[in-house]
Length: 482
Image 1 (cartoon, rainbow, N blue to C red):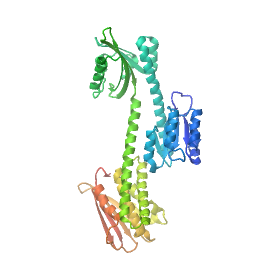
Image 2 (cartoon, rainbow, N blue to C red; image 1 turned 60 degrees about the vertical axis):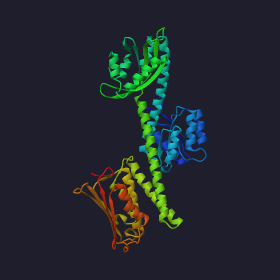
Image 3 (cartoon, one colour; image 1 turned 90 degrees about the vertical axis):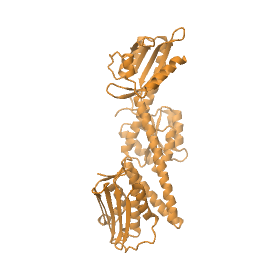
Image 4 (tube, helix red, strand yellow; image 1 turned 120 degrees about the vertical axis):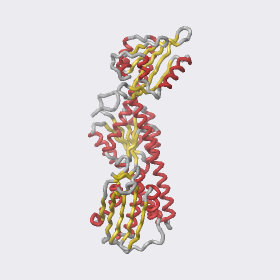
C-alpha cells in the first residue's frame, strides 16, 4: 500500500488505537494490520499517552466516550505532546456535537459507531494525507525562510538554486526600474509553463487570478512604500489550460543607498493541496454544525409535542423514545446515502421493516411504486409520518391482528401541473375502525406536518374496513419523481 505517514517512506503508518472496550481495540488492530498499518492498542488513555512518549505514531484513533479521561481530553493531551500527530474520533451518532468539540481541539475527522470498514479506511487515509501535507508544508516553509535568508547574502549561488529546484519551489527577481525579470525553471513550472520557458513580467501578471489582481498590486505597493525588507503573499493563479492553483510567496525588497526600492526577490511554493484540505475541513465543520442544530431542533419539537399529547409521564416516555428511534432511523437512512437524500421506497421499507420481519409480515404487507427521490429534509419528514401511521396500525389497525393487511402504493400523475406523487396507505382486515373524536399528535403530524413541510395534501379516511391515508406531493426540489 502507499505510505502516507510522512517524509519517511520506508515504514508503514503507525496508528495508536484507544477504546475502553477490548473487543473494539482487538478488531481494529486486526483489520488495520491486514491493510498494511502498524498498530498499538490500549483501553487505558493514560497508558496510551505514555506510549506516545516512548514511540512515534502518525495517527491517534480514539473513542469519544471513555471513563476517566475522555476522547476530547486525550486528543488535546496527545496532540500537545506530539504536534505531528493527527487525530480521528470514534463516536456514536448521539454524541456528534461533542465530536465537533473534539475536532476543535485538533482532531481532523470523526467516524460513527458501529464502525464500517468502507468508512474507516478512507477517513484514516485522508487524515494521514493531511499529516503528510502538514509536515511537507512545514518543512518547505522552513526551507523558504532559510533560503530567503541565504538569498540576502548571495542570490546567485548555484547550491541555493539546486536546493530550490529539489524542493519544487520557484524564485523570481524583478528589477523594479526596468521591469526586467529573471526566474528559475521551477518558477515557470509553477505557472504551468515548461521549465525552459522565459517569462516576461506582463506574462507573469497575466497568470494572476482576476479576483486577486487588485489585492496583489496593493500588497506590492504597501511593501515598497512601507520600507519593509521582507514580505509575504498568498494568491491564486490560472494556468494556460485554465487550471486554478494557489501560491504562497516570501520575498525581499532590495533598496539603494537612499532607500529607494530597486529590486524584488520572491520565493514561491505551490500550496493548492493545503488549500483544498483546509476548504474541505471547513465545509465539514459547517455541515456538522448545521446537522447538529437541525437535529436538536427536531428533538426539541418532538419532546414538546409528545408532552402535549400524553396524559402521563410513562406514556410520554414511551412515545418520546419511539419517535426518537424513528428520527434515528431516518438519519441512518440518510447516512447510507452520504446525506444526499433517499428514495421514497427506502423511507417506506425502513419504517415497515420491523413489521415485515415479524411472523408472516412479508405476506401481510405490500409495498410498491416508481422511483421518487427525496431531499434530506423530505426524507426525515416522510419517515416520521410513516412511523406514526405504522405505530397506529400496530396498536389499533391492520397490524394489530394476524388477519390484517397493509398495502402501500404510490404513482406519478404526470397530467397535473406540477407533476404530483400520489401515495396511498390502505389498511384492511383489522379491527372495525371507529372515527376518533379528535386527532392525536401522530395523525396531526401526518396531516399538518406533510402539508407544511412538503407543500402537499394529506387526507385520512377512517373507513370501517381500515384506515386509508392519501398523500399528494407536488414535484419539487424536495420530492423528485424520476
